[in-house]
Image 1 (cartoon, one colour):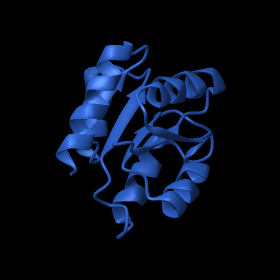
Image 2 (cartoon, rainbow, N blue to C red):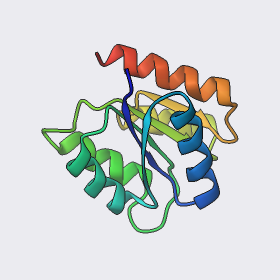
Image 3 (cartoon, rainbow, N blue to C red):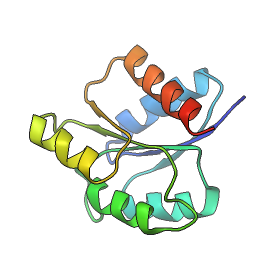
Image 4 (tube, rainbow, N blue to C red):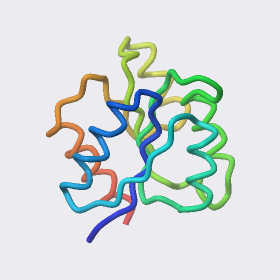
Length: 124
């Protein structure tokens, strides 16, 4: 069954690559270039899962996740950080804010798809 997955990533190439990977798996990929755009898209589309970068202009990933968790309609949406910030402290901070998982870029295709599959399954 196809799922709607929102990818929030400020690097256009990375955003397109992740979207393509998900589309090849049969999912619908929604994209946003920053947290503000992502929040608008999430509120409009109610995705089944959100993949989000941490470092973005405007609203970063941490602020996005806080806004998401405060939104009654979206607060239980599975959320995965996808970031180049890979220090142990960065990962702990992301999980502490309420992320379901934290993947470090560059992420292998198989690892990304496995995390997506795992968190979609746990949300149903």
